[in-house]
Length: 257
Image (cartoon, rainbow, N blue to C red; front, top):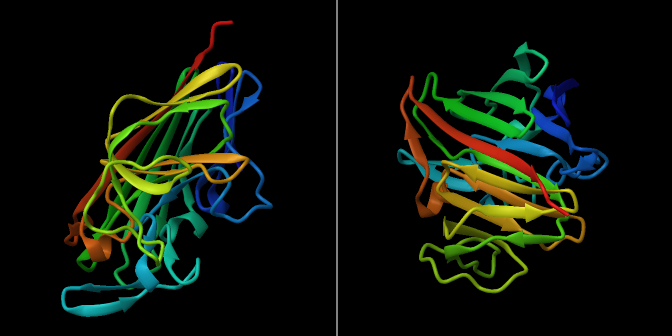
Protein backbone atom coordinates (compact mmCIF):
# COMPACT_ATOMS: atom_id res chain seq x y z
CA UNK A 1 0.00 0.00 0.00
CA UNK A 2 1.15 3.54 -0.85
CA UNK A 3 0.03 6.65 1.05
CA UNK A 4 -0.18 10.03 -0.71
CA UNK A 5 -0.64 13.33 1.11
CA UNK A 6 -1.27 16.89 -0.06
CA UNK A 7 -2.59 19.60 2.26
CA UNK A 8 -5.67 18.25 4.05
CA UNK A 9 -6.08 15.42 1.52
CA UNK A 10 -4.87 11.88 2.17
CA UNK A 11 -5.30 8.76 0.09
CA UNK A 12 -4.08 5.19 -0.19
CA UNK A 13 -3.15 3.32 -3.37
CA UNK A 14 -3.23 -0.48 -3.53
CA UNK A 15 -1.00 -1.88 -6.33
CA UNK A 16 -1.75 -5.49 -5.34
CA UNK A 17 -5.52 -4.94 -5.39
CA UNK A 18 -6.13 -3.73 -8.90
CA UNK A 19 -4.00 -0.58 -8.73
CA UNK A 20 -6.96 1.13 -7.09
CA UNK A 21 -7.27 4.11 -4.82
CA UNK A 22 -8.58 2.75 -1.51
CA UNK A 23 -9.19 5.62 0.87
CA UNK A 24 -9.59 9.25 -0.10
CA UNK A 25 -10.14 11.60 2.81
CA UNK A 26 -10.35 15.39 2.67
CA UNK A 27 -10.59 17.41 5.88
CA UNK A 28 -11.36 14.14 7.65
CA UNK A 29 -14.32 13.35 5.39
CA UNK A 30 -14.22 10.02 3.50
CA UNK A 31 -15.11 10.47 -0.17
CA UNK A 32 -14.72 6.84 -1.30
CA UNK A 33 -16.13 3.60 0.03
CA UNK A 34 -12.96 2.13 1.50
CA UNK A 35 -14.17 -1.26 2.69
CA UNK A 36 -12.06 -3.97 1.01
CA UNK A 37 -14.29 -6.65 2.52
CA UNK A 38 -16.81 -5.81 -0.21
CA UNK A 39 -16.61 -7.20 -3.73
CA UNK A 40 -13.79 -5.71 -5.85
CA UNK A 41 -16.51 -4.01 -7.94
CA UNK A 42 -17.72 -1.74 -5.13
CA UNK A 43 -14.85 -0.19 -3.20
CA UNK A 44 -12.31 2.52 -3.86
CA UNK A 45 -11.64 3.95 -7.31
CA UNK A 46 -10.20 1.49 -9.80
CA UNK A 47 -9.03 1.56 -13.43
CA UNK A 48 -11.06 -0.30 -16.04
CA UNK A 49 -8.96 -1.79 -18.86
CA UNK A 50 -8.87 -3.17 -21.51
CA UNK A 51 -12.66 -2.88 -21.43
CA UNK A 52 -15.11 -0.95 -19.24
CA UNK A 53 -18.57 -2.05 -18.23
CA UNK A 54 -20.22 -5.26 -19.35
CA UNK A 55 -19.48 -7.34 -22.43
CA UNK A 56 -22.56 -9.38 -23.33
CA UNK A 57 -22.02 -12.99 -22.27
CA UNK A 58 -18.29 -12.20 -22.45
CA UNK A 59 -18.43 -12.78 -26.20
CA UNK A 60 -17.36 -10.60 -29.11
CA UNK A 61 -15.92 -10.80 -32.60
CA UNK A 62 -12.72 -9.05 -33.67
CA UNK A 63 -10.99 -9.33 -37.06
CA UNK A 64 -13.16 -12.26 -38.04
CA UNK A 65 -12.54 -14.34 -34.92
CA UNK A 66 -14.80 -15.09 -31.97
CA UNK A 67 -13.51 -14.44 -28.45
CA UNK A 68 -14.77 -15.51 -25.03
CA UNK A 69 -13.90 -13.51 -21.92
CA UNK A 70 -14.08 -14.96 -18.39
CA UNK A 71 -17.54 -14.43 -16.86
CA UNK A 72 -16.95 -12.49 -13.63
CA UNK A 73 -20.48 -11.10 -13.16
CA UNK A 74 -22.78 -13.79 -14.58
CA UNK A 75 -23.90 -13.91 -17.26
CA UNK A 76 -21.52 -11.17 -18.46
CA UNK A 77 -17.85 -10.13 -18.31
CA UNK A 78 -17.38 -6.77 -16.64
CA UNK A 79 -14.78 -4.00 -16.08
CA UNK A 80 -11.71 -5.57 -17.69
CA UNK A 81 -8.74 -7.25 -16.05
CA UNK A 82 -6.87 -4.31 -14.53
CA UNK A 83 -9.02 -3.96 -11.43
CA UNK A 84 -8.08 -7.45 -10.18
CA UNK A 85 -4.48 -7.47 -11.42
CA UNK A 86 -1.28 -6.76 -9.53
CA UNK A 87 0.31 -3.48 -10.67
CA UNK A 88 4.02 -2.77 -10.61
CA UNK A 89 5.02 0.48 -8.92
CA UNK A 90 7.29 2.34 -11.33
CA UNK A 91 7.75 5.48 -9.25
CA UNK A 92 6.18 7.09 -6.19
CA UNK A 93 6.61 10.21 -4.09
CA UNK A 94 4.80 12.11 -1.38
CA UNK A 95 1.89 13.08 -3.64
CA UNK A 96 2.09 10.91 -6.78
CA UNK A 97 2.64 7.40 -8.06
CA UNK A 98 3.09 5.62 -11.41
CA UNK A 99 2.09 2.00 -11.99
CA UNK A 100 1.90 -0.52 -14.82
CA UNK A 101 0.47 -3.97 -15.47
CA UNK A 102 0.35 -6.50 -18.29
CA UNK A 103 -3.08 -7.29 -19.71
CA UNK A 104 -3.81 -11.02 -19.32
CA UNK A 105 -6.12 -11.62 -22.25
CA UNK A 106 -5.91 -12.99 -25.79
CA UNK A 107 -4.38 -9.81 -27.26
CA UNK A 108 -1.81 -9.02 -24.60
CA UNK A 109 -0.92 -5.35 -24.20
CA UNK A 110 0.03 -3.19 -21.26
CA UNK A 111 -1.68 -0.57 -19.08
CA UNK A 112 -0.12 2.28 -17.13
CA UNK A 113 -1.57 4.85 -14.77
CA UNK A 114 -0.38 8.04 -13.14
CA UNK A 115 -2.03 9.45 -10.00
CA UNK A 116 -1.26 12.97 -8.80
CA UNK A 117 -2.75 14.37 -5.59
CA UNK A 118 -2.83 18.04 -4.63
CA UNK A 119 -4.64 20.00 -1.94
CA UNK A 120 -7.59 20.67 -4.23
CA UNK A 121 -8.00 17.36 -6.03
CA UNK A 122 -6.75 14.25 -7.75
CA UNK A 123 -5.61 13.91 -11.37
CA UNK A 124 -5.45 10.49 -13.01
CA UNK A 125 -4.08 9.38 -16.39
CA UNK A 126 -4.80 5.88 -17.68
CA UNK A 127 -3.16 4.45 -20.81
CA UNK A 128 -3.43 1.17 -22.68
CA UNK A 129 -0.85 0.06 -25.27
CA UNK A 130 -1.15 -2.64 -27.89
CA UNK A 131 2.07 -4.63 -28.09
CA UNK A 132 2.29 -7.75 -30.27
CA UNK A 133 -1.26 -7.85 -31.65
CA UNK A 134 -4.05 -5.52 -32.82
CA UNK A 135 -6.73 -5.22 -30.14
CA UNK A 136 -9.97 -3.44 -29.26
CA UNK A 137 -9.95 -1.29 -26.13
CA UNK A 138 -12.23 0.74 -23.88
CA UNK A 139 -10.82 2.31 -20.72
CA UNK A 140 -12.11 4.31 -17.79
CA UNK A 141 -12.41 4.61 -14.02
CA UNK A 142 -14.88 3.33 -11.46
CA UNK A 143 -14.94 5.63 -8.41
CA UNK A 144 -17.25 4.30 -5.67
CA UNK A 145 -18.12 7.49 -3.81
CA UNK A 146 -19.64 7.40 -0.36
CA UNK A 147 -23.29 8.38 -0.57
CA UNK A 148 -23.55 12.16 -1.05
CA UNK A 149 -26.26 14.36 0.45
CA UNK A 150 -27.27 15.49 -3.03
CA UNK A 151 -26.00 15.43 -6.62
CA UNK A 152 -25.96 17.46 -9.81
CA UNK A 153 -25.99 14.87 -12.60
CA UNK A 154 -27.67 15.89 -15.83
CA UNK A 155 -27.03 14.36 -19.26
CA UNK A 156 -28.45 14.78 -22.74
CA UNK A 157 -28.59 11.13 -23.82
CA UNK A 158 -28.92 7.71 -22.19
CA UNK A 159 -28.47 4.17 -23.52
CA UNK A 160 -31.62 2.17 -22.69
CA UNK A 161 -31.09 -1.36 -21.36
CA UNK A 162 -32.66 -4.54 -22.73
CA UNK A 163 -33.94 -7.55 -20.80
CA UNK A 164 -30.37 -8.85 -20.52
CA UNK A 165 -29.35 -5.66 -18.63
CA UNK A 166 -27.25 -4.55 -21.61
CA UNK A 167 -27.21 -1.21 -23.44
CA UNK A 168 -28.99 -0.90 -26.76
CA UNK A 169 -27.46 0.98 -29.69
CA UNK A 170 -29.80 3.96 -30.00
CA UNK A 171 -29.87 6.53 -27.19
CA UNK A 172 -32.92 8.16 -25.63
CA UNK A 173 -33.63 11.06 -23.28
CA UNK A 174 -32.60 10.13 -19.71
CA UNK A 175 -35.23 8.45 -17.58
CA UNK A 176 -35.66 9.29 -13.86
CA UNK A 177 -33.35 7.82 -11.21
CA UNK A 178 -32.40 5.33 -9.84
CA UNK A 179 -29.75 4.63 -12.45
CA UNK A 180 -27.36 1.92 -13.47
CA UNK A 181 -26.99 3.32 -16.98
CA UNK A 182 -24.66 4.87 -19.52
CA UNK A 183 -24.99 8.51 -20.59
CA UNK A 184 -23.38 10.99 -22.96
CA UNK A 185 -23.11 14.78 -23.15
CA UNK A 186 -23.25 16.12 -19.58
CA UNK A 187 -25.37 19.28 -19.40
CA UNK A 188 -23.11 20.82 -16.78
CA UNK A 189 -20.45 19.97 -14.20
CA UNK A 190 -20.99 16.62 -12.49
CA UNK A 191 -21.08 17.34 -8.76
CA UNK A 192 -21.59 15.47 -5.50
CA UNK A 193 -22.41 17.43 -2.35
CA UNK A 194 -21.14 16.32 1.07
CA UNK A 195 -21.46 18.04 4.45
CA UNK A 196 -17.99 19.64 4.25
CA UNK A 197 -17.27 19.89 0.52
CA UNK A 198 -18.53 19.68 -3.00
CA UNK A 199 -16.80 17.18 -5.29
CA UNK A 200 -16.64 17.69 -9.07
CA UNK A 201 -15.62 14.86 -11.40
CA UNK A 202 -14.41 15.63 -14.93
CA UNK A 203 -12.84 13.66 -17.77
CA UNK A 204 -12.05 13.71 -21.48
CA UNK A 205 -14.03 10.45 -21.76
CA UNK A 206 -17.24 10.86 -23.76
CA UNK A 207 -19.33 8.22 -21.95
CA UNK A 208 -20.44 8.14 -18.32
CA UNK A 209 -22.01 5.33 -16.32
CA UNK A 210 -23.97 6.47 -13.27
CA UNK A 211 -24.91 3.96 -10.57
CA UNK A 212 -26.93 5.18 -7.59
CA UNK A 213 -29.05 2.14 -6.69
CA UNK A 214 -27.08 1.18 -3.56
CA UNK A 215 -27.76 2.88 -0.24
CA UNK A 216 -24.11 3.51 0.63
CA UNK A 217 -22.38 4.42 -2.66
CA UNK A 218 -22.84 6.44 -5.83
CA UNK A 219 -20.58 5.63 -8.77
CA UNK A 220 -19.85 8.12 -11.56
CA UNK A 221 -17.72 6.29 -14.12
CA UNK A 222 -16.05 8.03 -17.08
CA UNK A 223 -15.39 5.64 -19.98
CA UNK A 224 -13.89 6.00 -23.47
CA UNK A 225 -16.83 4.02 -24.89
CA UNK A 226 -20.14 2.54 -23.79
CA UNK A 227 -20.59 -0.81 -22.05
CA UNK A 228 -20.53 -3.67 -24.58
CA UNK A 229 -18.65 -1.44 -27.01
CA UNK A 230 -16.94 -4.52 -28.45
CA UNK A 231 -20.36 -5.52 -29.80
CA UNK A 232 -22.43 -2.35 -30.25
CA UNK A 233 -19.57 -0.07 -31.37
CA UNK A 234 -17.51 2.60 -29.67
CA UNK A 235 -14.32 0.69 -28.88
CA UNK A 236 -10.94 1.97 -30.09
CA UNK A 237 -8.90 -0.25 -32.40
CA UNK A 238 -5.22 -0.31 -31.46
CA UNK A 239 -2.49 -1.59 -33.75
CA UNK A 240 0.82 -2.73 -32.20
CA UNK A 241 2.49 0.37 -30.79
CA UNK A 242 -0.76 2.37 -30.58
CA UNK A 243 -1.89 4.07 -27.38
CA UNK A 244 -5.34 4.82 -25.92
CA UNK A 245 -5.12 7.40 -23.14
CA UNK A 246 -7.72 9.25 -21.06
CA UNK A 247 -7.69 11.70 -18.14
CA UNK A 248 -9.91 12.11 -15.09
CA UNK A 249 -9.99 14.64 -12.28
CA UNK A 250 -11.79 14.60 -8.95
CA UNK A 251 -11.74 18.09 -7.42
CA UNK A 252 -13.14 19.29 -4.12
CA UNK A 253 -14.09 22.64 -2.67
CA UNK A 254 -15.08 23.41 0.89
CA UNK A 255 -18.71 24.30 1.33
CA UNK A 256 -19.50 27.59 3.03
CA UNK A 257 -21.73 27.29 6.07
